[in-house]
Image 1 (cartoon, rainbow over the protein chains, first blue to last red):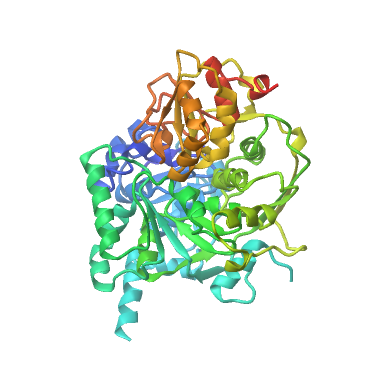
Image 2 (cartoon, each protein chain N blue to C red):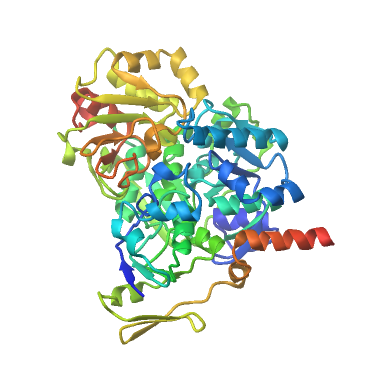
Length: 163
Length: 421
């Protein structure tokens, strides 16, 4: 498992350049351009189970779900950041990508620190330090547990039309 | 208990007497805005649309604006799929290529009204706070879900109260004000929050308010709002909206805010956002003299009649520097028609400007006016991210139409007050 570390204000153009937005939306096509202008090595070397650490306001900028779909498709276990921009945050819920807002864990991380995430108990360990993150509200967990927003919507529509 | 604007409007739409920040509520927006991304949105729910249809044909607003006219067969195919969808489901509010940028159309066509709730799969959906609506950006998947169900969840945000007092000096505009604020509180300074504007606001036209609300997302805001006053009413009347056709919402006097910010407008000078973040803001005078190759006046931020007029007043009877190019991008067909009639387009083209069709143009870097490595663009648009205009080795600077017009005369960043004396 590798940790990818980035700074503050990682915007949607860095995560996925705007020039591809209207011609590229399938997960397998997105991967080649993922983080293209931020870190050209990312798409070549990322492996399932990797973690991203970043500063504040991760995902700021456009309403652009390719980065979320792409990060989920390459198997990013979680993005841990100081804070997230709100459209990106909602998008992650909708796609089932796990985001953890934990500025202290980000501060504690330095190259090579061992990182473990205990989703059950909302705990991240970085080296020998431990940090806790709050659970998502139940309304949001229902969406994630359904497998994402469209699955959630489909199950609701099905129930509605049954009645 | 006294309530903020966000608490009042989200409570109303959730059918709840009281809501508090952090609470999750279910709401039915009045409209759902989508643009060229509509093709990707409907693709996600093809079988579901066949089975359930859309929630209502008056809910969607669809505008083709991002890559228009189509730049490739792939884009053309997407546009065609959208036109077919519009026809099949008899979508009431569809704007084909050439009508303008979606956000300008939503306001100009009276689709956003005070006290209404609008969501859209574009981050600058927050613009409609300019006339007292609650509006916010969502993603494509959520737009697909709303298209089917007509509803979604929202977290009631905390609110920030910005008070603007005093009077703007000559050569300083609402763009300078919003850049000043973003420079002060940073690109994440209003993350997740509802931003309310208070103070001496009658000096700001609806066009000016649009600029500030539009850039709310650049400080991380969920929405950014100006409350209905004589200026709003006059504007709405001018587009055929009567005072009785909406119910304005105002915050209570003692509502609770997470932050209160006060700015003296008379102290603000022309500002510029330097690469590669919108909060890297400096006085224009600090970077004056820097060579620029491309200038852009327009977009959903600053492409309205008043913006083009400011530029034309500076460029009238003059020529831009011979080594640079100036792109003119009206926000809508209505703006273009009005500017044509007033001779403004003639002035800008005679000065050396290249007229682009009303739409998003070079702002997102997908076509029209893509930059080359090492080039710099000075633009009135809203984002200067690395790679934004299609090239990650180019630089983008953001400023007011006056700063961009004045700078185009010299081919260098220039304080507009120098040419406005």
